[in-house]
Structures are given as structure tokens and as C-alpha cells.
Image 1 (tube, rainbow, N blue to C red):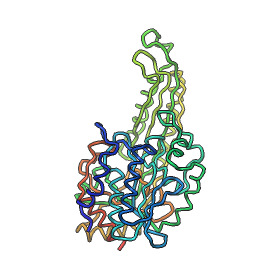
Image 2: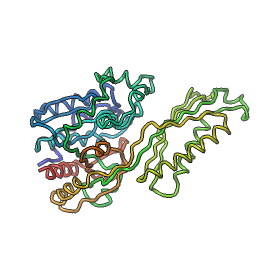
Image 3: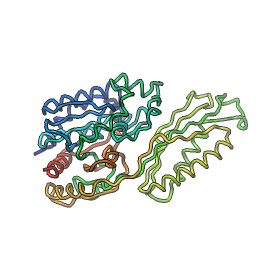
Image 4: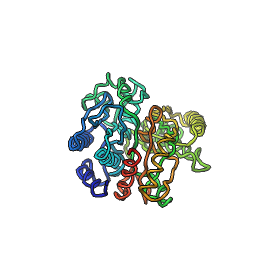
Length: 392
């Protein structure tokens, strides 16, 4: 029986990695990420699983039986200044499940995409859905390209495109993950299921104006990239008004030269849009592009909107959800709620090719991607035991 204590013992060695005053930062292809990957290898070796790395940098801990295998897992990387459970909780559960059943454990590379704006990089590579080689030229805030970061981490960019050859090793995939909303908690259940994942779009926006003196430049002569960015951010939000089906977030802003007495010459924005129906995102994007054109004309600031990533909505395996729901009723002693999930998961990427599911662990506060992220490990143990029962 998987317990809260056994999960705590697995997670404890990770606690100090990337921990700062404002949360956990374990960006992909960094020393912190490498330390987490070393933890993965130790966990696998303790269970006598065979560790392998696929061409995209995903970590596999494989049983000694012949594939295809059922697999469980999640990711090791985090957002900037995030929480401790988003990703690693699913891997700790997966290793506990692997102690009970002959499954593979997968740690997908760069799920968050926080460094290079490449969300679900590893699972998309495995599914053959990466825009190669274009994605390799993306740069982090220090100017390092993804190609360079991969090479430094021992992943060969020229081989990433061969990652789909590993996919036939999997019979199916189950991801245990902290609920990133209060939906499961409101249902009064320790665990739930994601019935489907919504369509997700991530835009990278560049605004180019002209640097000038903050006091001496008349209003009519300004080409203020930061003021234009502010108007675009507000418009992106207001164009999504009218309900909770379409959710839009400007999640990051970087201004140059970022000086107190200088008009900004260049601003980068990252805007996230999500909805259960793809057409709602597309309609919002058309409206935002039209607004951006009008804003550029009015402010004389060049505005370029680029789709950095897109994942279409995906229903997760109905048959697998039935198995997990039945196991959940047995283990938890009550019906398992099912929700439409607005968060992205590697399981949603793989669902296009193999049976996949997401088991969500109750999050009473609903906080995620923040230091206050918290979960009761007893609930997580219930989730892991549900997966064991479903695979029995």
C-alpha cells in the first residue's frame, strides 16, 4: 500500500533543489534540472529499473519485461519561483506505482517551457509535434539558444527528430498531478480525473518603438513600446470578457532598456489563451491581431504577434477513465469527479497516439505555479493507489 510517508521519503531529497526565498526555480537544461535528473536516476536504480534517455532528453526508467509498457510519470522542471509539487509529485507517485506494478516511469523534459517558451517540449518531441529546427533557435533571457542548452546537457539537436521511434514502447500513459484549481476540492473528493484538456495558445509578442528621454520628449514625438504594450495587455484581457470559458493571461513582460528615465524602445510580452473550444481561441486571436494593427498605426510602434506554441483540446481515453473511475470508487470509497482541465499536461500530448489519462490530486487552496502550492500527501497516496488498482 502506498502511503503519505513513502511519498514524503521520495520527495524529500528534492526539497532544497532550486529553492529560493520566493519559491522553487528548476528551469529546463540548468544545473537545478540536472540535480533533479540525478534524483530520478537514484530512484530508478533503487527499484532496479533500467534508466535510459531518449533523443529528446526525456528520462525513462524501464522494467525488465519486454515492451510495450504501461507508464506513469510527469516532469521535473518548474516555472520561475514556483511550487514543489507541480511535476515531481507525479514522479514520486510513479516510482511508488512501479514498486507495485511492472511499469515504466517517464520524466518529460521541459514541460513548463519557462526558459525557452517551449511548453511540453519532451512529450511533443516524442509525439512528433515539434517545429524543428526552428524551435532550436529560441533564446533565453541571457541569449543562450535552445540548441546550445541542449548540447550542454548532452542532448543532440540533430537527433531530437528521431524521438517518435521510442513511442511504440508505450502501451499507455497515466499522469498523477496536483489539481491546479479547486475543482476536485469543491467536489469533496481526494482525487479526480481530467476528462479533457482545453485548447492552449501561447503568443510571443514583440513591440519595437524608439528609446528617448522620459522628460524631454513631447507626447506627439514618442514611440513608447511600453505604453503600447500596456494597451495591448488590457485589450487581450478585455477581448476575453464575457465568461469563464476563455481565459487569457499576460504572464511575462520584459522591457528594454528598462531604465527609469528612458522611454522603452523594445518590449517582449508572453500572452496565454485557453478555452474548451478551439474556435473561441481563434476568434480572440483574430480580434487581438486587428487591435494590434490599429494600435501600431496609432502609436507608431511596430507590433509582431507570433504563435510560440499551440496545443489543441484533447479528450483523454474514455476506456482508461472508466477503469480509473472504477478503481477510484473502490480505493477512495466514493465516486471520482471528472473535470475539463485548463492546465496543460504531457498526457494530453500523448493522448493523440496512445491511451492516456490524468489523475488529479485535491488542492484545497487551488494555488499552483507559486510558492504557496500545497497538497496533502495522503490524497496523493490515494491517487497512486487508484492507478495501482486500475493497472491490476
